[in-house]
Image (cartoon, rainbow, N blue to C red):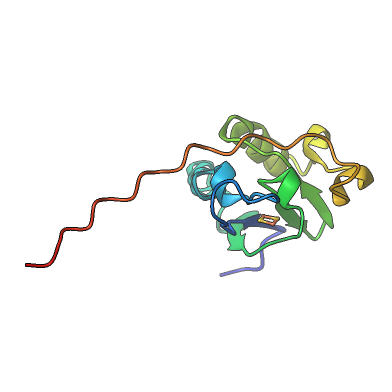
Length: 131
Ligand code: FES
């Protein structure tokens, strides 16, 4: 496979719901990564233009879901599924979605904009009792 022009590293780190920092996974990052992969493939950009990878924590948990973009050296934050088409449009055109680029204040939880809400926790399946 050739080297792609860009690599997206979608943080999918997960912490339990309700922890102070929260996590990207509890704000929808796993589905976000899947949707990016699907949209990139549908537009036939996967082999040459961009690859969407998962990553662990970027230490931007309060601003998640976060995506590190290489080689642009920027981070998108508070990304939702609704942003996927615009992100992939921009990738196809070699652009950046400026409204999603985290400003310096978002790198410090004390000065960051408000976090997105966590998605509801899924109810664990009942574990059958041993007989
Ligand atoms: S959990 Fe995603 S940046 Fe920390």
